[in-house]
Image 1 (cartoon, protein in one colour):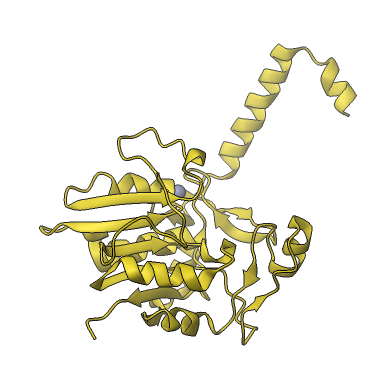
Image 2 (cartoon, protein in one colour; image 1 turned 90 degrees about the vertical axis):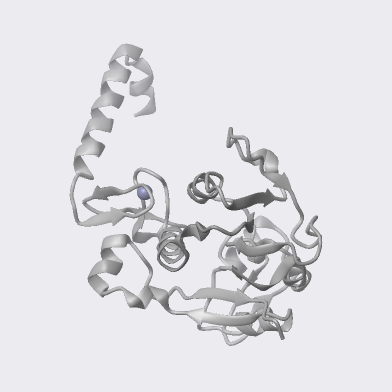
Length: 261
Ligand SMILES: [Zn+2]
C-alpha cells in the first residue's frame, strides 16, 4: 500500500488529506458531550490511552477526563482563586489550559514549574521555571495553593517530594496532588530494580512510572503532614452529566491541606 501512496502526485495527496480531515470533522459533530475547558460540543470524546478508554480525549483542546474534572472543581469551588487578596500558586507540570487561566488572573502570582522547562513552548511572559520536586527552589510557607498532577508517580523519592510540597505550602494553604491509583492494591507497589522503559510499562502501566499507588496513597501524603480529603466531587454529577463532561466516576480528588495545628 505504501508503495502505491508513494506513486500518487503530491497535489492529489493533499486533496486526499483534506478529504480525510473533512470526513473526521463531520464524524465528530454532535451535542452529546461538552468540554468545559474549551467550551466545545461533540458527538463524543475520542478514545484514548495505553489501555484504551472511550469518551476520553477532547478533539479540540486535548484534555482528558482528569483535566476536565479538575477544571470543574477549581471553577466551582474556587472560581480559579479570583479574589481581592493576592494568591501565590505553584503549578508543577503545568498543563496549557490551566496555565492560560492562571497567568491572566490579576490577584494570582503564578509559578509554573517543571524539571524540564525546555519542553514547554508556552510563548508568554510567565516562563516555566526549572524546579526539582525533591528540592523545590522556594522558601518555606510560600504558596497558598499548589497543583501537582500526575507527577509523583514519576519521582523515585516521592516521600521527599511530598515533604517538599508541605514545606513550601503556607499554613492554611492547600493543594491537589492527583496520581494514577490502582484501588485493587492495598499497598503501593514499587520496585526500583525495575528500571527499563519496557519493565516499567509492564509493572507500573507506563514506561516512565516508578510505582503503582494503592489505597495507601492518602496515608503517604498524611505522613508528610497534610490533612488529606479524598473528595468524591465527581459523584456530585449525575451519570448523564459524567458522560456529558467525559469524567471517570472512580476518580477521587486528593485535596491536601496544611492546617494551623
Ligand atoms: Zn476541550
